[in-house]
Image 1 (cartoon, rainbow, N blue to C red):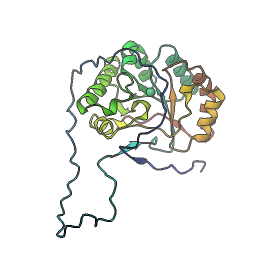
Image 2: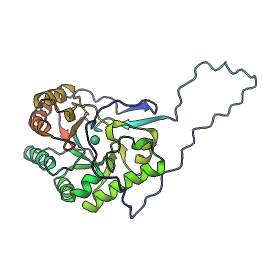
Image 3: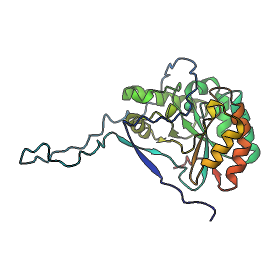
Image 4: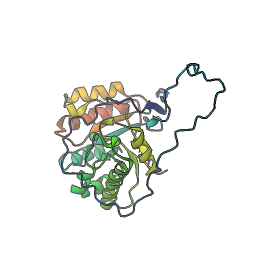
Amino acid sequence: MKLRRAHGLVAVVTGFTLLLAAGCGGRTPTAMPSASPSASPSPSPSPSPSPSASPSPSTSPAPSKSPTPRPTTEKSYVLQRTSGSSGVALTFDDGPHPTWTPRVLEVLRARGVKATFCLVGTQVKAHPALVRQIVAEGHTLCNHSWNHEFKLGTWSAEKISSNMRATNYAINAAAPGAPIRYFRHPGGNWTAAAVRIARSLGMSPLHWTVDPQDWRRPAASTISSRVVKGTRAGGVVLLHDAGGDRTQTLAALPGIISGLRAKYHLIRLPDTF
Ligand SMILES: [Zn+2]
């Protein structure tokens, strides 16, 4: 009764629409990609799903006849913009980070909240114990690229796939067997190729519904009020546990949790499907 209707499960975006979502915008990349090898290369992404033929030879040559030149559909893709239920999912990007991730985990643990962590490969490689801790404490994992490459989706299919697989490989080297069912593109700069390849590797392209811009470091009260006011049932909240000083995010977290819990269940995204 207290839950409002879950909004649409998915939203379609065209490939040309460069999403201006600013998630992680201020992040400074660290080491070089060095896309480390993947021991078990999964099947390479299918070359290209045919753009659906369009034969229909019209008898009369009337080029200007077709009434509505519909937008090209082969450029469209579907992003996941919901938790998949009426619950609200907190997601933390760019970690793991030795300073901030343990503190975020502590706040979540003290309040019995499970969340989702979108991990960057270089951070994973540098701090594998934190990945194990995230998993041990019952949170869900998400691939956030090898080194937070904002333009990953514009690369060749082979390079995109290699980047994603290297990240998954590092995550599973740290936490063997942990499922990685989500991929979130750095900056939300999705492309059709990134979506298709993430799916081919068994990962759902996870976007978000609420972005309080915590990486810009507004006051903690601003972050929490943006989240609490902006969240609806089924929402996915974008936060960061790395990529800069996360003092404000950390300070906002208790208020975010209590504010959201007044209306919603807080859930981790399911990874057992
Ligand atoms: Zn990010």
